[in-house]
Amino acid sequence: MTELLTAAQMRAIEQAAIAAGEVTGLELMERAGQGVVAAIFEQWPELDADLGCQAGEAAPRPQVSPRDISGQKMGGEASRRAVVLCGPGNNGGDGFVVARLLKERGWDVEVFLYGPPDRLPPDAKVNYERWRAIGRVIEWTAQQVGEEAADLFVDAIFGAGLKRAPACEILEPLTKLYTEGKTFARMVAIDAPTGLCMDSGRALCPEFGAVWSWLTVTFHRPRIGHFIDEGPSYCGAMRTVDIGLGGHDWGEAARQAVADLHRLEKGRGMGRVVATLMSPELVSPYLGKETDEHKYTYGHALVLSGGHGRSGAARLAARGALRIGAGLVTVGSPRAAMMENACQLTAIMLRQMDGADELRTLLQDSRLNAVCLGPGLGLDADREGLVLEALQANRATVLDADALTQFEDRAEALFEVLHENCVITPHGGEFARLFPDLAEKLNAPATTGPVYSKVDATREAAKRAGCVVLFKGPDTVIAAPNGLCSVNSAHYDRSAPWLATAGSGDVLAGVITGLMARGLDPMQAAETAAYIHVECALNFGPGLIAEDLPEQIPAVLRKLDIF
Image 1 (tube, rainbow, N blue to C red):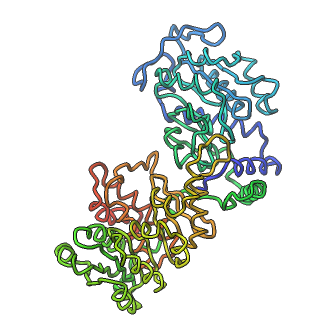
Image 2 (cartoon, one colour):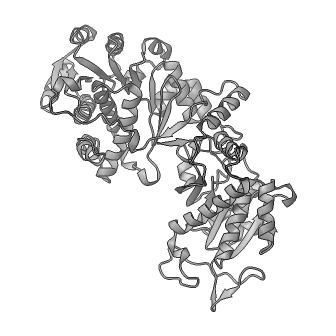
């Protein structure tokens, strides 16, 4: 399990470790710098080759003339050149460590400092002086920074604690570096790309955004902003470095930090609970089947279909429920769609159901323990009655798509009947219709922090709705009414852009329903389904369409050692 921390949580963990005498701030800074250098050479091993050897380079080497202090030639060959951009805080201190370590490897290193050196924090000031003993520090000028060329740029200006938009004199030259191609594929951000709010993943400067990095190196645990909203786009590749804080449980310090923050910032949602990044160990271990059980042991899921010409989404959901292991799956179909459903269903059963009365009769069978409504359901007047009837039956219920849109003007009426055994799965548009005030805060300009995030919005929505909310997207956020929260990120090495295809959300709704039919609680079902959904897309790859997703589930379960 990987906890995603806010800036306040990480700061509290560091302070708790220092106060306990486990480590000093200087030691943490040195370890951070060492971790950044190691991550650079892991990302670009050609940079760790013998100086002067250009074979296998991923990017053209700029022609740089030797500098009077650091550009010494070695064996007749020019050394590699790095430009390290340091800021006025401890992030800048990390940058001075990186600069020193690169120089010790024979690199030509140029260091720029934004702000006066006498205002650096104590630990950063020590590393500034250590660097000054072997190299020079150039005062920041936008023009000179914007004209630099190097094999490697290091962004150590502002880290994860940034709370307001940086000055234009910082971001403008860094944008110039990117737009003129001088950074090519070697801009490294320490902790966070400058200008990015790491509590929300949003750029704080409306004009210049944030620094575009090709590698971001953070410490101990990732921040929420590394995985949601614009964060992954700005971060490039991600590395998390162990700096020696993992031997103790600093979780209470992190939780207390956010509790303190919550008291200071009244009304900021459910921030006291740490968010969790979805990973294989969070997938339910109870997905296998026992040899001495029968089909009803694993539940009976009901998926309601739309009318003629709108039944495909329900079949996709039903297939997802069946493949994830529900013992039985039935499609409840209006009379007008019975023929088209019957022609395409085999293992999935079919039952005619034209209204709430027939649904009520069917749900008298207690073995039918999970219901999915929404995919292709339609917006006819009688569809709302089906939703209300299913909710009143108090079964495990998944509401998606049209089942949510039905209540876009009367969200409170829906919240009154939702119960704790429900999962709702809105995408951005549906979320905005159900929770317009939360969507407005989420979409407000991000200029000062802490910025309202998708994690904040989903937690608040779950509390208001009284059930689990799965807020879809490549940065899917899942939250329960008690504040528990997971982020299912389809970024970095789990990037799955092929999921942007019609019907993929219907399959997800069906998989959640199948898992709830099998007895998983709503939060566990939503988390497991979201993770498996992405893994199915990765397993298939380019060319994916929604029909392919359920058929990848067996292979994904085998990879997870589930039989």
